[in-house]
Length: 357
Image (cartoon, rainbow, N blue to C red):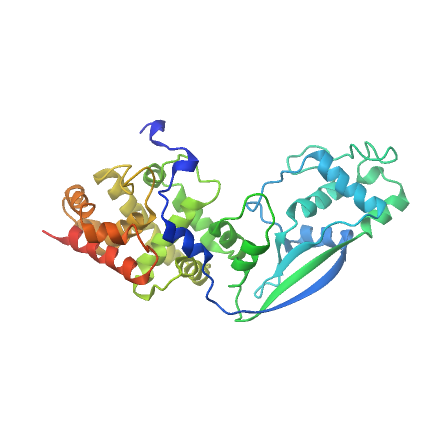
């Protein structure tokens, strides 16, 4: 296996308009309460340290420069207004998930700790002479109190009906103001926290899968993890599938967030077996009709082989060639790919061809 099998990140997927349109669908009805809260920085910091405020490490790497962080701290010391943050209060644990404001919150936390996340020291720079070069402990007592007691306003959202966190996907998508919009899986990984997160990471390291995906390291936007989740969701519940795909996948992850050892063993055995078989029998371009991975070809081939059982499928390479020449299959894998009829059609054709003698 050689490194030139791996593609550049911006060429991983074939562009399918229906897959992008699926991400924009939001057919659910929610009841949301919204209220404001004025937290002192001391309180916010204590909530971060205790884990009550969840600042997802994946959501956005800390991208502010030391000067930007210093100027935020200076704004508090001067009593200048600072833009509010947005938090989502989840139902189960009552944690406050950061929707928007991670850079501000991390800067505050780092200043209290006197070091940045990378371990470098946090001292103020490019600020007024009275504070230049000082860290938190170097401030005089009045300035310490002024900083600790400064207020940062938060708008807090809480879903009251239905009693789950389903609306947070839309809230994250619509309100996050970062330069790069969060992917659906990045949001899921923040909202849905349990054994399944670690389990998906383990599956994502599998060698055959890494070569089929086309990158030797996990995707920075978690698109590889989302593909695994889509495979598992359709493998387990394809008969219950309904559009949109993004909600179907999210519901599956939520239902299995605390999956036990028995289910983990079942899923890992099936995933490893299917990916090893596809890589060995078809090769690293198994899911590619054009330049990148076709997600619909991926889900139909893998789910068909998982449901059928790889031992029952003979001459997989030859039948794969027949499959990608089937007009009905190619249409179901190219247009309206998240429609229930198209999902069922491409799975049915794939299963019939792989099981034929």
